[in-house]
Length: 372
Ligand code: GAL
Image (cartoon, protein in one colour):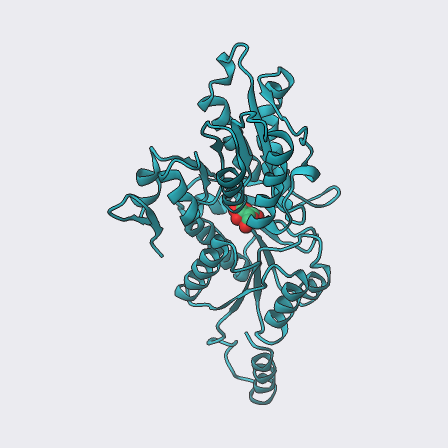
């Protein structure tokens, strides 16, 4: 709803008295996505906009080029110029939106933190995939594929590449994977040759492919140039996995295939999986994430009390948990969260997991392409 409409409605009410309570006031939903340079956010923005419009709302998606000041500005405009009644925000930097969050709270605008938590107590709800589980799936894939429980004296060399420290998700992904793999590192079955096991050392600013590539090139030059085998590159998502894959293709002296993990089912990474360059990706169905967000937004805009019962009432055909404990917007202040369940995609199940559900198509050469 635009401000000007509010003023008009108020004037009309004051002068004519009998105007019905704004029967034709279409609610406006402002959608703020981080960037168009990473594949998924284009899909998220499009799905969200499409679904809100189909449900009868006005909706507008903005993309902020991974620039946190620009995102604050975009949100400011969604509030003031577009008259947003509700905001759906995937934050570039979870810590940097306090100014606009204050405005939203003062204007009574509910804010759904979408996929990435906003570290501000004004956040009404959080909708995401279970981020810690994303990491555990990557770690467990390594354990199972290399059969680490029966490795005997065999030692596998591994390097970690994590995400953007400004993104609250990145630590959850890394910790999930590391917690699964740590016992094997402690036992000596996995060897981190670079010694880089702390999140800060392995993080990738802005989830940038090039940055991930350069860091892996340095690691390969420093620790693997003598032909030392790299067995596993644990990458938190597909953009970093692409960078690491390029570094391995150009700078790796070893002769084995490196097990590379990812997340997001990006088109280029699915091609790498078909070609045997990447081993797996963790898939998060973005259409489902948008549906969960839409139903939650509807309930919020209708002024309903919201708790986990919305999950049963909405009749979703996907799994989702209501979690009031895992995510804190400030110390001791938790944000009620709706967490969907991620799945593992490999070359063996990609058709069944992605094509058969209508989210991707497969061409004659076996490569997958997003269907939307
Ligand atoms: C995360 C998101 C991932 C990945 C990454 C980089 O917040 O959960 O799916 O896309 O950002 O964009």
